[in-house]
Image (cartoon, rainbow, N blue to C red; front, side):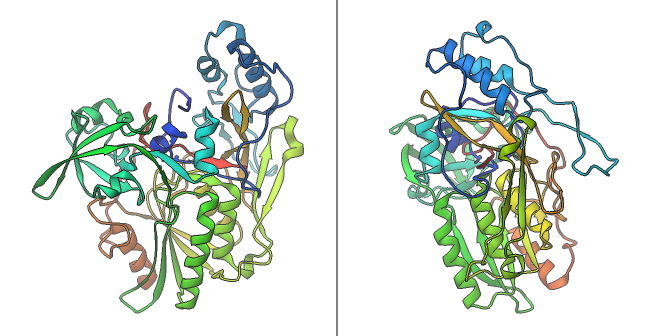
Length: 473
């Protein structure tokens, strides 16, 4: 089970990575895979103790943070001998925020402060590899809209996403089902306690009982957890606007290497059908590999963006030799669209590496029109390291685009504020975010009928399944 900071942000990973059900087994949503390789966690860090007792691991952790942690000069350095558990010591090492951040542009007079570290974590290496290498998840494959009803125990709780190859999908659980109870606990109690951990399996063969309502029909669904293949591109289709414009609609869920083949197939289909606009649905994309984010952006930008700087990754001053520049593919993929603008459906679960796609495209001159709500705000990434059966994903670097823009700690704003309706299936013409994008394509403005999503960015101690933000190099 991954060990996370004591205060979790309101997001989805840089990675719905997501992610909590996915990432309670593998952290569950950040940036994913920086600059190129798309490899999984690296080897042991040099220095420190090599043993695996708690005291030896704590000493190693102290030394690793002192050397490789992004905020190594600002973070606390407690005595490892005072801590009897690895998890407690890990939490004690995390940066608490508040210090001035030096300007990205030396000529800039603007200032900001560093946020508290809400992202660094560790988890069993087998779980990390299951997601990032094998493209699989352990669990039932059902995610709810718990974040959106924080502090509203009398509000209905809806299923917002079901993994297509999961036990939940096999049993007919679908987006828009109202959750009345989980394992006998009513939804009002789950919302009040902000506790959706029941949706996170820790082993195969575990039972989950859901009471669901769809329309006037209530039913009980019994599920058994298992390892299943993820579907990083669950939907790709061409839709036509009311004015006859062909638009490619692409849902991207996980920025892992298994995304690349269906991504290429979708783009090839879009190109063959003559699409002139593209809608990327990143609303539930918590991130993944930086290399995959770069590939996505390369398909969008095409030949005009070939070889341009997608992102610069900046480490602390003791690790500056690791600073690197990630460039868009050169030559561009043969099925790249080469667009001057792209529409992105986004929200609080759009995090880490998925935010990198938005920021990186803006840096190379592609107009990004966001619809939904503000993203999670994680311009930081990990270079994971393995030790004693765990994979440590500690914030190692920040990312900026070709214009030197980054540090969107409060998230990237959506140009058009649109509230979700979980009763509408993704890709349906009646789904509010997609409908708003299609209207904007025709009319050139945000729909007047769009409803505003909540502005509050809730902070939470317990996240939903499959939500841990990853941006991994």
